Length: 254
Length: 181
Image (cartoon, rainbow over all chains, first blue to last red):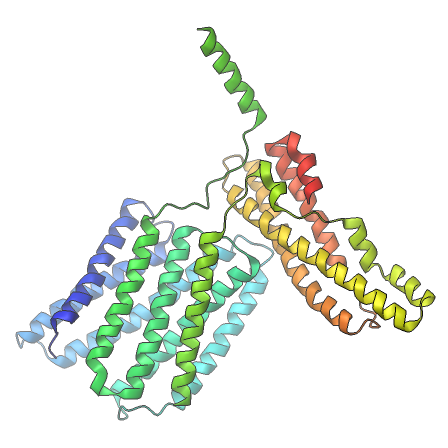
C-alpha cells in the first residue's frame, strides 16, 4: 500500500480543517452545546493519529498491512456509530422543543429507520459487484448499508424541517448539512467502488478523502459564521423608550 | 446494476433535498414585530367558518338543484382552500417570529413565544390535513365529511397567542397586529 502525493494532500486538508473545527468548538465553548459532535471530532482526530502512526510503522516493516486494515475498518465502524449519534443528537436538538411535533417526529423517524434498514438489507443481499466474496466485500456492503441509512435519516430530517418550516440554528444546520453531503458522496463512491471493483480502489480512497474534506469544510464554515436566528428582533418596550428619552433630556439639559 | 442505479439515484435525490434546504435556510428571515402586518395575510375567520359550516352546506343542498349545488359547493370549497393556505402561510411566519423570541431573557416573553410556536406548528399540521380533505371534497362535493373545523380552532388559539405575545412587547401594536392576521 503506497500513498500518492494526492492522497497526502486530501488527507492533510481534511485533517487540518478538522483540527481547526475542534479548536473552534473549544474556543467558542460549544462543547456543552453540541457534545456529540465534539465527541465525533475528537474521535476522528484520534483515529487519524492512530492510522498515521500505524502507517508509518507499517512502512518501517514494524507492523503488517493486516494491522492497518483491521484498525482502519474497526475505527471506521466506530466513526459510523458516532455519526449516527450525531444525527440523533441533531434530531433531539431540533424537535425536542416542539411539543406539537414530538410524537409525530418520533413515529416518522422510527418508520424511516425501519424502511431504510430493509432497503439496506435488500440491496446488500441482492448486490453482485466486482469483488470476490470475502472480508472486503462484506465490509464494503456493511459500510454502504450504513451510509444509506445515514443519508436517508438526514434526508428525512431536512424534509421534516422544510415541511414544517422550522427555523434552524446556523451551526446545527451546518453540521447536518455537512454530514448529509458527506454521506451522499460516500454512498455514491462506495456504490461505484462495489460495482467496478479493486481496479478503482485508489480513486475510491481519494474520492472518500475528498468527500470527507468537503464535509469538514462545511462544518468549519458554519461553526465560524455568525448565527442570525437566535437574536430576538422584537420591538423596544415603551418603558425602555421613555427611560431613554428621560436620560436624553437630562443629557441635553447638562 | 439495478441496485447500483437505485442507490445512486437515492443519493442524488438526497443531494437535491440538501440543496433545497440550503436555499430555504439562507432565504428565511425573521420579520420585525412592528412590520409583521406587511408579511401576514388577513384571514376573515367568520367568512371561513361560514364556508365550512355543515348547516350552511345542508341548507344549500336542500334549496338548490343537485347540479347547481355541486357547482356552488365546489366554489365554496375552493374559497375555503384559499383561507386554509392563508392560515398556513401566517403560521409559518409566526413560527419564525416565535422561534426567534424563545430565548428572550424575559421569561414571560419566552413562554409566550413557545406557546406561539406550538400553536403555529399545530396549525401547520391541521392546515395540511385540511388541504388534502378539501381537495377530496372538491372531487366529491356530495361527501358529508366535516373539514376545516380544527383549522379555525387552532387559528383562533394562534391569534390569541399572538395577541398575548405582542402585548408583552408592544401593547400599542397588539390590536393592529391581531387585525392583520
